[in-house]
Image (tube, rainbow, N blue to C red; front, side, top):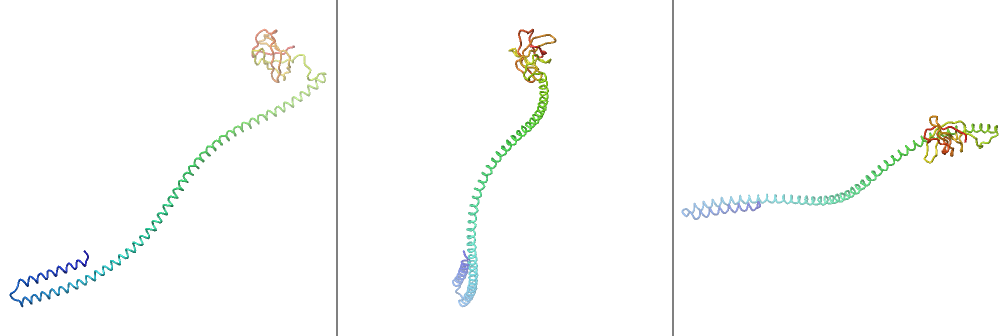
Length: 273
């Protein structure tokens, strides 16, 4: 119930009480009508004054109610303006939220793409690490081979220099021998009737009767020379040179001269053939 309704209800209640009291007084007293009339007049005057007071109170309440209604209308207008502003702000916030959601979706897609690229780059990096490791291992192996090849080259170069020096020495010796052969009236390919007095040993014995001895071309041995085999001062047999190398020769066992089995380590002596 509003304030105005409460005021009207109060006035009606007061007037009802007053009229009820007047009716009771009129009906209950008939003795002294003049006094009663004066009394009723006084009551009526009192009621009139009270009515006037109530009317003034009512007017005051109406003014207060009007003021309150105006204030409420003003507050309501302000609230409506605030609601409108809030609705506008809410629309702007919703637009911002939609923009943020769109940006979030784009960022999520970009993050997913970045994650996939990162995974691909990680795989590529791992492959590159493996390739680098393999390359390093290959490089280390190549370096080791290069060092070994360099060492071998240095060794061969040393051997080459030694061989060159030996070749120079052999050429000098060959020139000296050639000069001596010319003095003797011999040619370099003339076969000498007997090997020089040299001694060696049996290096190997094959099952087919061939024997490898430690005497070669450097020792003056030629194909067709015969060599005697001894063991502990005892004659064992004789062999005939078939193939000659610089430091060793391959000879064939002459069975007609064999006195025992030739063994590795037996002594070898030159002999006429």
